[in-house]
Length: 333
Ligand SMILES: Nc1ncnc2c1ncn2[C@@H]1O[C@H](COP(=O)(O)OP(=O)(O)OP(=O)(O)O)[C@@H](O)[C@H]1O
Ligand SMILES: [Mg+2]
View (cartoon, helix red, strand yellow):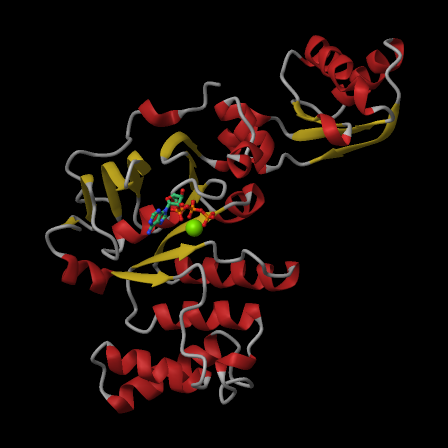
């Protein structure tokens, strides 16, 4: 696969001072495991940069190192030209961090939480109260402002968590899987909120497991697998590498998966993602109308299909295209 723009001109700049985030060979080890294994990143001011990868890829670990919450074991990182390892107290002024799980106090109300966060950041009480009111309004949480967080829905928690990370108006925001577990409507609202932050001048570094989220939000995407960056590019570059759409086939007889896979390879020249136990087979299509060629060839080969669907590529197909293996492998390891 050739879209690995790792060696493209204008990649990580050695000086790094014009970048919001510059990471060079970042490493984190847990015992024997290299959870982050030499990642380079270059996030430009004013962009949304997406880090896309499956469970356990090292996304959270990377963000935590950049946010000074975890020690950097190898490599070098700068945020707006400030050395992360040497000047952690400055970095904490520059970065707002939103956790993968909303990190707010359960017993306190939303209003109290925001006020308390402000006070903990050294903001005077009256000003902290005003900022809390502004953020409650900005995030549509006014009606729920006096409810204890324990009664909040997942979407309300995420919004409060994000609001809390904005109290000090940091120029750079880290969002760790901002919409995992949210329903589609709440997800869309979160996307709007994130776009709004960037319109206000923030830079956003976000992690996600969803290609469509990276596609919707990110100006550029780095794909991470086993602690390494396997590709980088714009959403369009990544999608072009994978194909515009995916043909999903359910075969009448699960035993015919190998025969069907051979036909797909012959017609499309690319490898399908197989789930033999389910009788399923997915394959990227450069053009949706190639699906017809595959179906005709399958019928000619005597392979019978229970159902078929042409859909947008999922992270599975992106991974297969970029790494030669699917994301489920990791889950079974
Ligand atoms: N504190 C820790 N101690 C030991 N191993 C850890 C620790 N934190 C993370 N790991 C391991 O490092 C690897 C990367 O984990 P990380 O949480 O960064 O992945 P992730 O990409 O954020 O995954 P997810 O999408 O599930 O959040 C995993 O194998 C994880 O088990
Ligand atoms: Mg994570």
